[in-house]
Structure formats: structure tokens, C-alpha cells
Image (cartoon, rainbow, N blue to C red; front, top):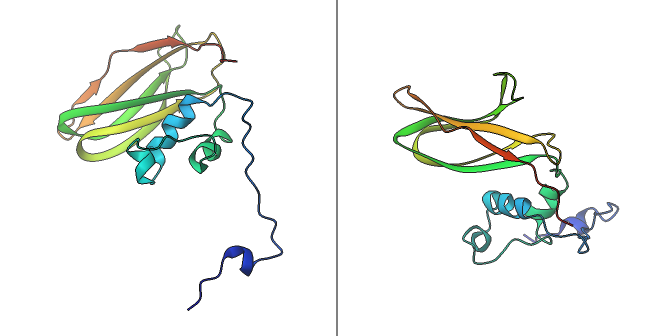
Length: 154
């Protein structure tokens, strides 16, 4: 059986071409997240670096904005993690929170975890906390983390 390319099967379709903008700096948060989600072995192991020409980069760069705060963490618990959360404090004046990411882990001892806190402008103070629930039902919160969103590099 002969294998035909999509372009041969559908000649009337106009295929989009990716043209990266090399005048803008490469966004390091997109590169890190691209490395986490890729299924290509050299990039996953760090043998080859993900660049702005890779589909992982330009696929994410078109969706994620610089006004989102990216949180990446590796959570471990010797008892096994059942659930993991990133909890975002909406403001400093109250205890109002929002869960921005949740991951079911089903008993694994360690998990890579990431989430985005949306709509963060330059100079905004971001406060968040990580929490895990182990297999025994014990909730383990992390220390409260705070940082100020820096101005974008030009």
C-alpha cells in the first residue's frame, strides 16, 4: 500500500506556514513548558534545546500571554500523592482563594506540576501556595510563596 502525503490527498487546502519572529527575544517560560510537554526524546532529555522554530514553542507562544504567571514545581511525598493543587490568593486583604491547577496523581511519590495564574500585570504581587493530599488523607500545604511580576525584558 502506497502512503500518500496530506498535500497530495488535499491539494486545494492552503496549509499554514510558520514564520517565527526572530526580532523578539525567546521566551524562557515557553521553552521550559515546551520541554515538559514534548514527546521528542532528544528535547525531553535536554540533548537538543527547544527553539522558537520548534512546534512546541510556537504552539504555546501563540496561546500563552506574558500577563500569565507560570508556576512549575516538583512535588514529593513518601506516602504517595493522591491530589496536588496550586492555590492562588486573589488579594492580600482577604482569604479568598482560587484553585488554578489540580492534578490527580493516584499514589505516585513524585510529580512534575505546572499551572498558570492568569491576568498578571507588571508590578503585581502574586501570592500562591502548593498543597498535596496523600493516600492517607493528610493535606500538606507548602509555605506561602510571594513574588512581584517583573517588567518584560526588551
